[in-house]
Image (cartoon, rainbow, N blue to C red; front, side, top):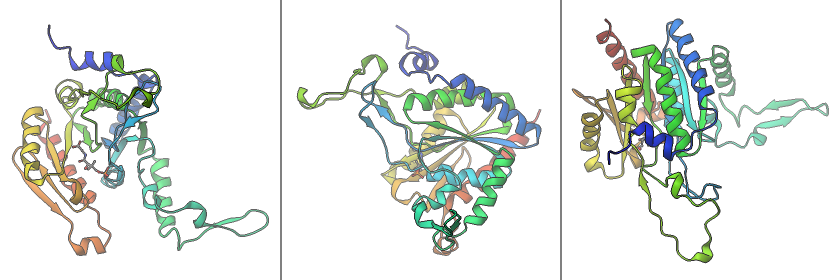
Length: 312
Ligand code: PAZ
């Protein structure tokens, strides 16, 4: 029997979120509005996907991703003139607020009067004025459209909806797929409804392979878009081969290759013709420069060239 298509598999084995059509409409409207204003639009995926073990989920499999790369990149894309659809894991790091994620908000506030006047302690929240100003401008100009996911199924359907929404703006769309997406899952049909009981003894799991969504995204859903995927390994010796293999297989535009432990300071941007190493020096770190600024600068230039080459 023929293998079902990825579209068929998505519909059968991954529960469709009830709000997916509504979200797709808002993404289409967002993309068309911003391109009419002369902006390019990027979909950033960010954070890890949760894989449930029960349909009334008590337990799930998760991964390490904090969402920092996606959240900081969103800010740099906005500074580069893009409008950003930020498809992120619920409660992962968020653009602008990420800078204060380690601070206890109550420690940063002081009650100034009996009437309840509150002031912000600038020593606890350095830069708050600058960041707040930029955040409010971004909100006012609707430059950031946040969309949340938690479970793998939501991520897959929402990314498909984003790709279909952005197919309406052709090569002005970019995908920046920084989320750490599970490779394994339990199909809905094989998932127990209720909490797995430890009284039944040790738990043996059998997981299916998650369909490779990059393939229909590049070929069918958003064939004119500029697509960047990310490749993470823990073994540096296999990283570049895997990145090149991904480019050969999916025929998209770029892979950002990184190793778990060094990902904050070193990545390689691999395209079909080039391999560019991006490295933060000690001086950069002292100046609070982040590697995402370099990644975004490299990719926005590549996207410009891509748009020029694809002009009819
Ligand atoms: O989210 P984070 O900032 O902690 O980490 C970023 C990252 C390592 C998840 C990202 O750079 C990445 O490589 N994403 C793709 C992972 C993968 O190969 O599935």
